[in-house]
Length: 72
Image (cartoon, rainbow, N blue to C red; front, side, top):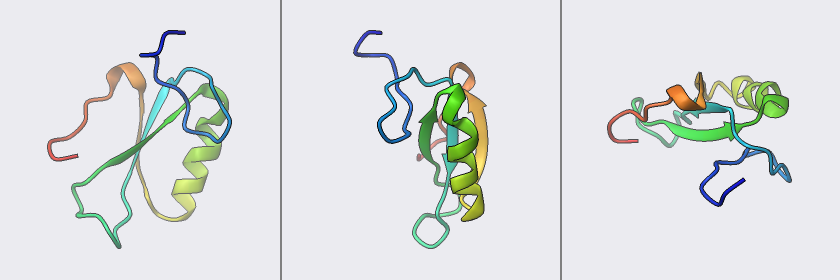
């Protein structure tokens, strides 16, 4: 893995990111704002559930298909 390889956002994980989890905390972000976490295959479900339970998860997209919205 090169230094440019995006890695999973799960604590302690150093695996390559395969997924982008786009989220938004409506208490502090404007509706169109998207923050992102990256996830490997192993951690995608765990991180999605963490955000989903809080009502923050907006989208899950394969990393190579992700296009950040304007103003993110």
